[in-house]
Amino acid sequence: MKRLSVILLIAVGSCLATGGFATDATPEFPVVQEFYWDDGSVDGYVNDPDGHYWGVEFGPELTGGSPGTVSQVGAVTSSWPDSTFQGCYLHIFSEYNGQPYEDLSRDYLQGTPGVSYDWVGTDVYVSTGTFYLVYESYGNFPSCDSLGYDTDNSGHSYGGDGWQPLGYELMLRCYWESAGIDTAATTWGGIKTLYR
Image (tube, rainbow, N blue to C red):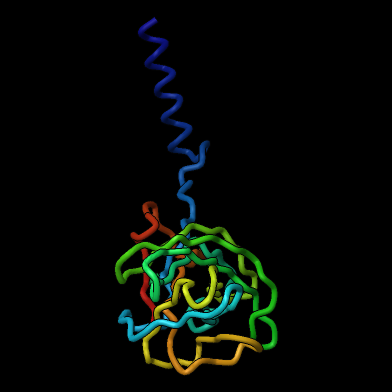
């Protein structure tokens, strides 16, 4: 019986060495990137009636025009002018003719005290490489939560009726996953490129 076991081990080793089994089975993991245009400092807050929208465009400068998936969305919100967080909705919109077009998702974000990003998971595939992360006010004006902004202006922030560009940057960010480099080990934050 011992002799038979040794023969079997030699046979298995021979198959591996001669390519009888796949030896290059390393999957292609996604590249995970955090997209943003704000500089990370809050200069003020905006708030609007229930159902109003503010958005940030993410396009070829960041995605390279390739398809990918939005896996996390985040915002800096405040409970100002009251002390209660009502939360908000974060949407992903497709792009058409340089403006937000079709509403692809709607995720509720509660918001927490303190000036920092709150995140919520989503799973939105974008085939064109251009999309909008959109904040929807939720609650009764003027006591609805407000969205943080800084006074920078890259031309990627939109707001209000007709999606006219704003003169400041909205504090909206997301994580983007796309097929890319070959690597055997990655995590949500392990391979991350910060863009501005």
